[in-house]
Amino acid sequence: MVAAAGLHDRAMRRIMGADRMGHLHPMTPCTAAGTIRLEDAGATMGGQVVWRHVTGSFRPGSMTAIAGANGTGKSTLLRAILGEVPLAHGTVTRGGLGPRDFGYLPQARIIDRGFPISVTDMVLGGAWQQTGLFGRADRTVRLRAASALHRVNLGGQAQRMIAALSAGQFQRLLFARLLMTDARVIVLDEPFTALDAPTTQDLLELVCEWHAQGRTIIAVLHDIHQIRTCFPDVVLLHGGQATWGRTPDILTPVTLQRAYGGTRDRWADMPS
Ligand SMILES: Nc1ncnc2c1ncn2[C@@H]1O[C@H](COP(=O)(O)OP(=O)(O)OP(=O)(O)O)[C@@H](O)[C@H]1O
Image 1 (cartoon, rainbow, N blue to C red):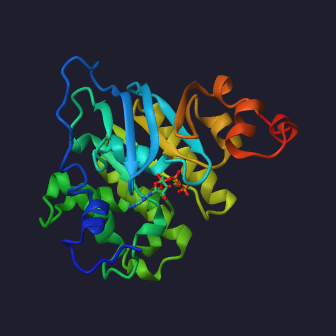
Image 2 (image 1 turned 30 degrees about the vertical axis):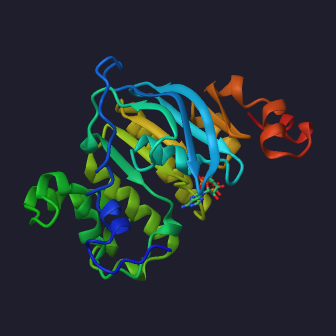
């Protein structure tokens, strides 16, 4: 659990969108504009190889799910894309995208919600590019924050402290904060975990709206049916390797059985 001892706490700053891209790798001019590309990339954690020889691209406006069993390195991949995890080998290039182009929704479980901040201030943190990290939000930004809260059905919760929210309400709040960033690339780590079906559907529609607006979506997901129905592209992690491509080609009964276990019939019977 991340302690939120103060605004300078690393994780809290990351939620506030401040320093998460502090150590981006240098941009490589030859990468197509807006394309995020991994080339023969590898990552190690605690001295263990997580994945290696990963090559593939997130094109501008693409919508890609990161799938795989627990511990296969999905979050590590997101953090490598964001520049938070140094690669053991290979490169990640971002096609001219800078820190301000990325909006990140971390796993809710790593956020300490005891941090004394109101719902409104948390959402306003998503507009740090306009206000500065500790600056005052003007009327326009406050109206946008109210609109973002309304969009995620939290209009009536604006004055509450974030600690008073339910898990589902807090997840909605993180989405409202993402709305404020207006980012070109939206990076989501298990955005629908612990949400009820209507909330999931509502927030999934918001993700689809972002995609329709031409933003690049990269999301770690566990729901295979959801990936099959909503995400055209997928990266499937298994055994330290990534299989990357169009979802119907990658998520077959054979690959799913290999990645998650169970019987092949179980995956064949799943609605696609
Ligand atoms: N800070 C760390 N120190 C050492 N090992 C780590 C650290 N963070 C992650 N790992 C290890 O790296 C591997 C990949 O972790 P990661 O969180 O990326 O997997 P994941 O696929 O996102 O898992 P889950 O589905 O359970 O969230 C795991 O074996 C994990 O134990």
